[in-house]
Amino acid sequence: MAGPWLAGHQQISDSRKTNRALGLAAGNLLVDTSYGWWQDKHLRHHANPNHEGLDPDVGEGVIAWSGEQAAKTIAFILIHRGLYGLNLGSAFAPDHKGMQMPLAGSRMNHLRKQVLTSRDVTGGPVVDFLLGGVNYQIEHHLFPSMPRPHLKLAQPIIRDYCNSIGPPYRACGPIESYGECLAYLRKAGSVEHR
Image (tube, rainbow, N blue to C red; front, side, top):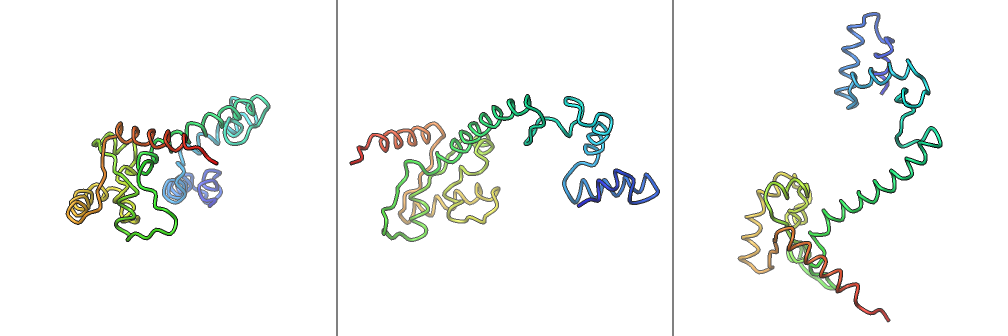
């Protein structure tokens, strides 16, 4: 949508106030780009086009505009992807690794399948924040479209239901969960393949 950019270039109306209002509405509300941020960035671009270090349009980002930027970007991408993978693994591994892995062809009902292959990671608001809600994995697997804030509310109901009818409901703190994951991975890695 070109509205914010056309308004920023004073190309929609003769009135600066009207262009600003349209730019704010289009940028901030419709395309989720701050009109003020864009105006500042664009004015700096016009003041120093293609001047590395001064023109934000040729600053470091996804595309490298110079050999020096390319060298930094390649290192940045490697570090970023490595940390991203570590972060994702740290968030998702405690929920499933070390839990039951059904054999091919085995049949379980939906409740047993989701409860026996997942665990919840407890620990209060800090764990909720760090794991972004995926620590309520059993609830998420049972009700994948349930909004994240409701998973915590559903947890005691689902836990009590599971405890009353049979499939063991597994919830533990992050240290115990990571310990179970590492023990499982160590065991899986030590199995000899023939």
